[in-house]
Image 1 (tube, helix red, strand yellow):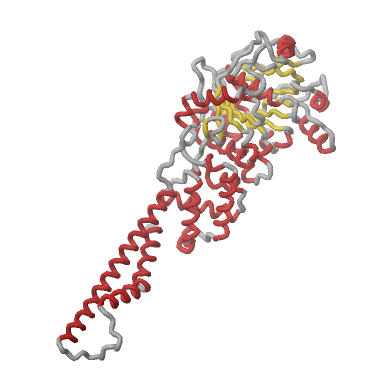
Image 2 (cartoon, rainbow, N blue to C red):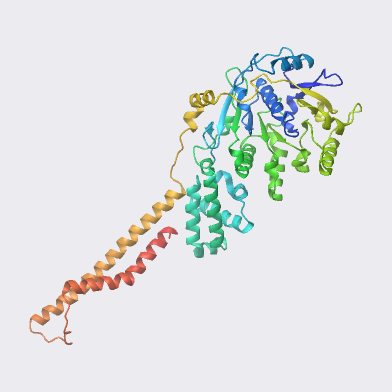
Length: 514
């Protein structure tokens, strides 16, 4: 096959015409859509194989746990072997052979791959507010906390850093509101409760160090093949907000970090966003605009983004219009809404006079699709029916023991396996509190000692005058306290007045930096 394109399958009336995605336009983004069970996962698999073979690194999320088989070659003895060979011959895929591909496994929870971590600072208040489902007022309080951390020079690395900073902001709200505005205790409490929920869902492990370096997602092996980075998402899907936010954060990091490359001959990275509807469900307008901006501009960084979803209607029109390379598997039309969605999907393709696009989308079988890819000058091709090529790697998951062995022996395990906990906001605030308490205690002790010494001196002078036969000006009380008793009483009085106030001044002064 051509070094300038990847082969997707056969098209045309007899499925003999090759359907190829030009590498030059692969960073113009794409869509893989279709109802459950129509072959989207296999299409994702063969596209990942093809990009890897052309030296393009790939990042994809494995929602069903089926894509780990990319690390192993298919084999002749399995039940679909004959069907795969027959299809390869029918669409002109020669030579067709089984082979494995270079794979790196990742897992936010660190169970089935190298941990993916981000710092709280990198996530930022906007995405974190989306993850925690905060109201506008609560997002404002969170933004103030981030600003305070920046101005105080405190790193926010993990959740305990953010929790400690929120406690500090709540306790000092009266002083801070003059600079940042009102910080409501109710908002601070709501954020803290949402953070507890996030911890219970296992999200705490996502925040911390060592944070992911993007260069580790953009590697090639010794043979020049792009590494396929597989994110284990079967458990992650139980927390859909965390899943969507983590992938959006990764896209944002790519957008903000990578240099401009214009129109490269092939992408620097291809990013598959499976279950894309989770990104847009109940998303505020500001977030959709953010995704639209990233999708529009990240292609100039050499990154192609491919959304994988059940229905094209899951993707907002502003973003759908930017997806030039499309593989549409069958859509079911059981209801009036389904029929409307099917017709809208058909209308987005350049029509083919040989068949009705809507009927084709309804009729294509498993492993078939309606496709359209960008041609010369970036124009969309006429829509074609296509038999998707069979995969070369193993169809289905690899053995879990073999997967774990691969993860443990990988060089990246030494880099990301163990978490780090360097000094950050939590430790800084703890140290400030300890120092403030120590200084206040020392100041209270000094003042109490001075008061006690002065009181003792007065008592001693009065006692000496009495024993010398002096004439004290006032008559002694019938119950005269000893010097030690007087000292104790004086000390207790002072601790309740000036010394007590000194303790509070010392603590508050140290915590606020004054």
